[in-house]
Image (cartoon, rainbow, N blue to C red):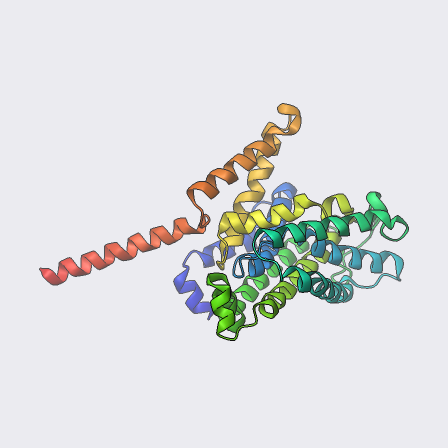
Length: 337
């Protein structure tokens, strides 16, 4: 499978090699941090892509499940005897799956924009609950891990960002693998059938609500696990960041910008959107009260969506199609001669 992947996408091998060597080739802490942000958002984009891309059910509640993993792991570490994040991550994924069922069962009765509105409402309620129960969650002030010493993989504590860089990269690769597995199995076929024509799919015996709920649960569990890794990386969480609408929108944009319903779309989307936001904020932070950076970021995304509605990955598809057509014409010309 790996050899087939490398043969189909010849650029994968050199790209992976550069990523592995990047901390040694360029030990700039800022570049490492931006790279980790790309890996995290690519993983979250892959999670969103399962339900939003293959199932065409646009969810804006990604931050809710991301924050479930973040809060579960940090609360268990700080208040319950330093429970390892690897253990609390499993518990967070379980809670995310339960919450996905609670939200999904009623919401998947809705279609189109009504489903999206319902997920926005659910995300808003969850964020307000995090703020309201401040004695447990820390309220709007959030929770900090405090000062931690030494290197420990078990507790996800490192003196440098390099180990987290590789952990984030491995998780991104795993998330791509999960998407590929789903795409090539029954769940992926059912999701595409429902996406094309839900009524026809149900007439053939596909229970659309169950299929979408299963995809939603997998997506939410992936978001929760990413939340655990992210929380221990930054060492601090608060509802205005991890449970914000901004976070949900950025996750969705990653998949939409790169290409919904594709294997590599979210990775490409993260590779473009994260540095784009960093650059626009860095060079335009003193213009327009700091809002011009976000405006330029939004404008570029709008232009991409207008001119490339299938995502940036469609550029590669067009190039591949032209190369294939050119080869076919050369073969025809050779045969004619």
